[in-house]
Amino acid sequence: MIEIATLAGGCFWCIEAVFDELAGVISVESGYAGGSAPNPTYQQVCTGATGHAEVARITFDPSVISFADLLRVFFTVHDPTTLNRQGHDVGTQYRSAIFYHDAAQKQIAQTVSAEIAAEKIWRDPIVTEVTPFTAFYKAEDYHQEYFANNPNQPYCQAVVAPKVAKFRAHYRDRLKKKT
Image 1 (cartoon, rainbow, N blue to C red):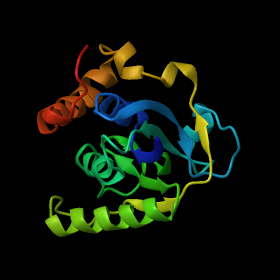
Image 2: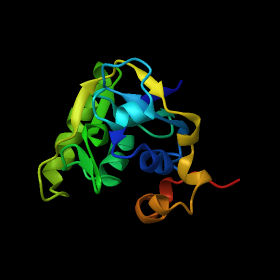
Image 3: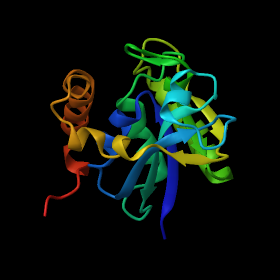
């Protein structure tokens, strides 16, 4: 049995790059969720007018990694305390959000969010939305596997690579085995 998680943590290139390497993750697709416009384009989402967030749709095997553990990784690879931004990326499309697919995911998201808040890992309060999933719109092909295909691109060097390095250092024992 497989499950789907839909997470927004700033630029989808960062989230996709991290979760691609996590054991138990079957696939990751960059896209858009949480807005009102059907089939939005990247250019439309960038205006902030559609209400969509850049998200990663993560297909995972819960017998290998639980939804709760996915969320624990999520909370360590982005800043869940900044409203509508991650670093220099500013706008509602860069918000922190967990789009739950069912009541169980909602409960787990609320529990893990409270757990992370109680641990005081972050100096400021967590502002991550826990909101119902309605639709996923896959981003344009050039956004898929962006970091893997463009590791020397300046944004990837400055922003994505450090997040991936931090993830690898913290979750070395949870990385996919190289074949």
